[in-house]
Image 1 (tube, rainbow, N blue to C red):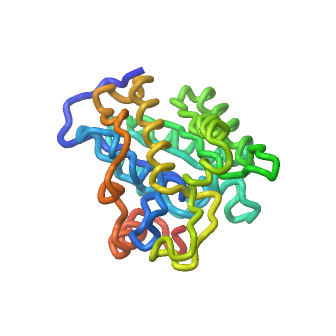
Image 2: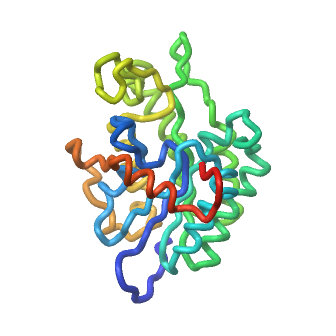
Length: 268
């Protein structure tokens, strides 16, 4: 349901909490693009996107290292907190890993409860699947338990849930291995100056993939009236120029990463 708003000064803020699939990237990493980086393309000036997602963060480390606390300190009534984790939570390293139906849900609940305690609106978004095609063209589900756990928590807490995971599986299946690969960071040597030796990255997206994910998230928020419908824009627009992608110069990116935390020491 669409929330009710009181009179306030300035735009509503939409804070994004997530991992490298969501975060805004540096110019030195272009064309790598997070979907949160391009989400503003599909929202009007009535909402300001504050992308606090951090590469390499799980729901556990994001919370433990003060990034959630920074968001909660800045949330105002009527703001949004959009939360998307799972990409790093499934990794085996104990400092990163969470168990889907255990501490993953427990950490996510901190985001949900923290937003509501401040009269803000939490939204849960599952991660997109990686390029996981096998030699036979099958698409294994690497992150499957985490979207399931997120959906369950959303139901338990009556929190809006956007299933980017299932949508990505549908897209990747329709496109097939080669066309899906073209959405990910598979670059030939010399293709981009930022990756002179090329790269084969089955996790992170090129602009076309990130835009598709951001478009879906914005469309879902508007059509399901999680946000006012008139906040969405350009949902049918086919392409955007490179300068619209929103890559940050490295110094600005570093400063934002350093300051958007209440933690000390390592601020992954």
